[in-house]
Image (tube, rainbow, N blue to C red; front, side, top):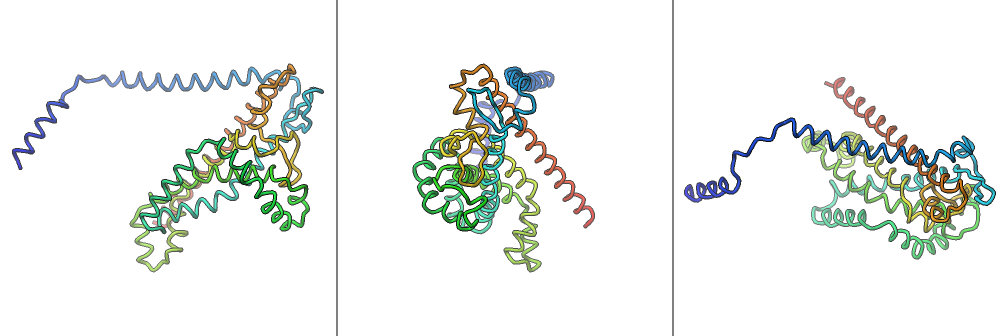
Length: 328
């Protein structure tokens, strides 16, 4: 046994010699610094180019471009407010469904289901995250839209009394369907990240709670979820980011009407979908600049959401640390 071990070690030393020519630490720093500079330069170039091409729209229309609701390229009337609201509304619908269902699914995958079922469903979640968005859009248009027209929208209209959010013709496509498809698209991201975060909670905390007499439900909601809340906020942030930027699937099912949605059944458009639908048809001099300006607004909104999420995560982390110190 000893002879075999020495023989294997000798083979490893011959194939992978221990002494390599030393690489100066300064070279590593130069390479890493160069990589950072290239990334920063590309990011700055992208932002500067977008702002430069969008400048004619902001200069000509001013703040009215952001707050206006009229959209008529023939009359040179451009207002981005309906698309901003459409983006926010579809994202809210998706996240209202994705947060509780995604968190519950992640808890089940991390702690409740048998190991075999857990691995199969975990693989299925990762496969769902890899499906192209155009496939989701086609599925929503051909399969879910008829269900929405005959089942989902009548039920929603009944709940709201066919007034307010439940008013209007029930045609299947529109704001509600776009939110539902976005929910299906962001759910794998929410579940996959939340599952990994929840599974990383120290086992001694879980076992300690159970040893003190806590039920499984109490252990999950009073020990596991509070310990993982920072990571769960990160999962929500990434899901919101994907919902904001989704283009093709939403463009296929939201109706693409450049107007504010007055109910869940209304057809409208998002910032990403209006760019995708009209970019190749922009002939009026300001039309292309306006579409690029909408892209700049989408970038700004995404940055604001990410910064707010980071501040929230940092505040949650500080409160947890201060609570731990106070308890100690």
